[in-house]
Length: 192
Image (cartoon, rainbow, N blue to C red; front, side, top):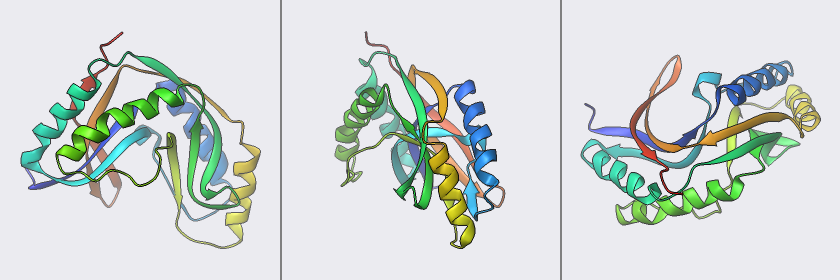
């Protein structure tokens, strides 16, 4: 096993949301902008990116997440509306937003921040905004304006609902063909 593992905590999305998001990616790809699109099978909603974690600390991280979320009840969230950071007309990160269920996702993030901080992981300076990253713009040019226009036309895009019954601690392995994600632990939402 590697001595350091690129690690993040996420919520997986439903097959229907994944399929619909993949369809939107194909529509946006038509703009011709230089974007690194997320492969549909890799789509997820990140709760917390931990970075390179010492392999010996992984069991503590997994236990902390499992304990923090054990009394949370399962819930659903709705993925709706394309947008971009920093702004839709200047896209750098292309995303799908979360409408209903947003407060539950924020609460999950809040629940894991404190125990992870005790383990030495830095808290985020900005508020957590649940979203599904679908692409990262790599360059400028006239096609970025076309992409921005397509994002605007899909501001109400409906990617459907996802039921959340667990959070997953993932290892991210990077290679030339892109990242692959390996589940390290699952934190069941068993409360109710």
